[in-house]
Amino acid sequence: VADTAPAAGTVLLGRYELGGLLGRGASAKVYLARDLLTGRSVAIKSFPNPRAGGGAGVGVNAAIEREACILRRLRHRHVVRLHEILATRKKVHFVLDLAGGGELFSLVDASGRMTEDLARHYFRQLVSAVRYCHARGVYHRDIKPENLLLDEGGALKVADFGLGAVGGGGGGGGGEGLRHTMCGTPAYVAPEILSRKGYEPGKVDIWSCGVVLFVLAAGYLPFNDASLVNMYRKIYAGRFRCPGWFSPALRDLLRRVLDPDPSARIDADGIVAHPWFRHGGEEDLGGL
Ligand code: ADP
Ligand code: MG
Image 1 (cartoon, rainbow, N blue to C red):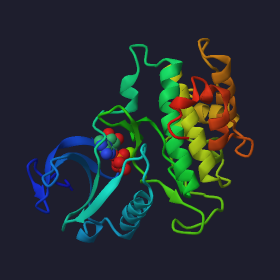
Image 2 (image 1 turned 30 degrees about the vertical axis):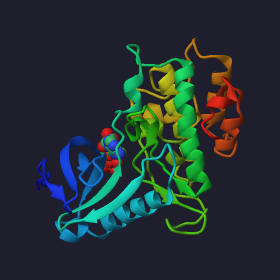
Image 3 (image 1 turned 180 degrees about the vertical axis):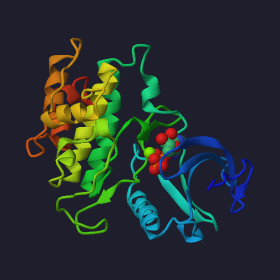
């Protein structure tokens, strides 16, 4: 069942002229497009329209609606912004800010890593976005390299709230209680998700941010193994080793972020107050 791609040059609603494919995920394809009204470039995330039938069904519809509902709540310099939603017969399109600078992980050097200062620069932007989302009761639950993009000016943009959850008084169901949905990507997933005893979604995002930080500064994953079961064991035990070049302050922060006990794990406010995070001056704290 080939879900046919709209041809480049197609104009949606007389306004958005589609260009090439920027990327694809499990649920959608993302295209470059030109807003003919403003002349600006945007990104269009296209989902097959569940109302078109073809076996998609209600669950898919609910997922698209939840992602839209989350994105509408968020307006932050480091979160991809939703401009509008277009529905055609076969597709639902999200018109998004273009993150045209590629993936954050394209900035690593030949050894696959970046300096601690550069890692701090992007980690601050990531934590500022995550802290903002958590303060608004929004949890991403799928923080990983493919969902961390850059705009043309080089600023980090958190994308893809497709697995996001809304807490603090309903919306996503479950209020502030524990979650049970398995989500995330194995190497970035928190141990309490693996144990299936229920988890707080905020703590899970913090864990994934820690894995991202480790990867940026080390050039490899903190928890890895040829066997998935062994990798899960390491995650579960919070067993990782920092490379020799990590500073003591970075090691200390990572120990607190990658704490397998979610109740002992540092939160976004704690990260912002940590010496490693603050090192380098207050002027660069990105409005935190
Ligand atoms: P899915 O929910 O299917 O995973 P994503 O929202 O993650 O879809 O988008 C898939 C890919 O498309 C991303 O990994 C990224 O490469 C690209 N992409 C997504 N949003 C944008 C954007 N706003 N600007 C540029 N590229 C994007
Ligand atoms: Mg994605």
